[in-house]
Image (cartoon, rainbow, N blue to C red):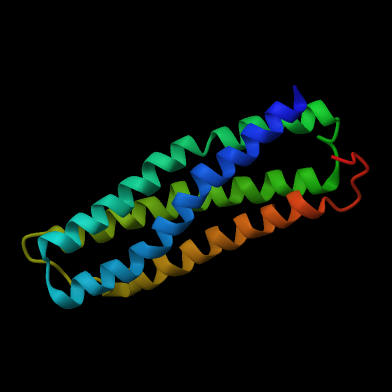
Length: 157
């Protein structure tokens, strides 16, 4: 059963976290482009699609830690340092996504679709969003490395 949990864990990471990472990374540049070109229908639609991808796949991404815990439990490695570090980094990435990236995307969308839109980067909003998205992606990259290298692991899986 552990191999099944591991397979679902990896597939969920690829199919759920991957789209969030890509869509969230595309959002700031699409917002800047839209602000420069004016609120064209295609640009607004693009931002809405990118934001929706982030929201929907963030929820689907909850399967990653669920099956990760099941896998780690099955392997008896829940107390290993690399698993604990992965859990903490995953929690940090999830918090950044839920508490910073998604709300800032909402704010940028609201600003750009308002009747009298403010500049997209008023107060550095888009720049901060890009930075937070980069941090989110770096955290997931670190988790991926930990999952592959598994420092100190003796499971042989």
